[in-house]
Image (cartoon, rainbow, N blue to C red; front, top):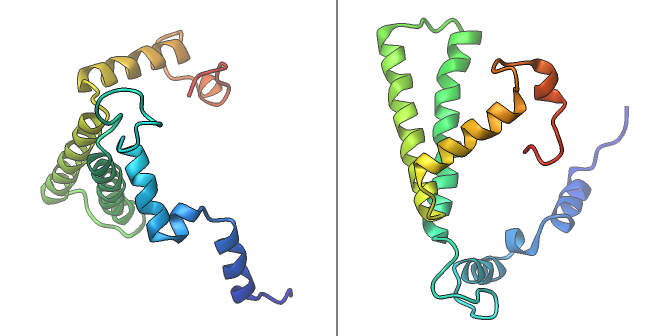
Length: 145
């Protein structure tokens, strides 16, 4: 068995973590850059993105999706029954997900309808037969994100 040194690993992790993650001042400066507060970065009026709203959307999408998944996990692996109450709880979490998704769209000044339309376009191109195919899911064309 190998000898594990978590203190050495912690030092390694710190070294391979961005300055923005390790230091509050550097993080705050990066937020200023992203928010368009430096003219040399953004050659237009106003920010490229509403950074606080984008962070709210991103963090909220992750946390609410996690709450949704927690319910599904308990149903799948712990025997939680799929009752009307469980279904209602899932519905409420999905509502929270869409709320944060909409805020992410707002932060990026994207029309939510355009986001959905782009998703449909992407999936139609990925699955030319109009049905899911595991081959095309795993073997994507260049540029298919």
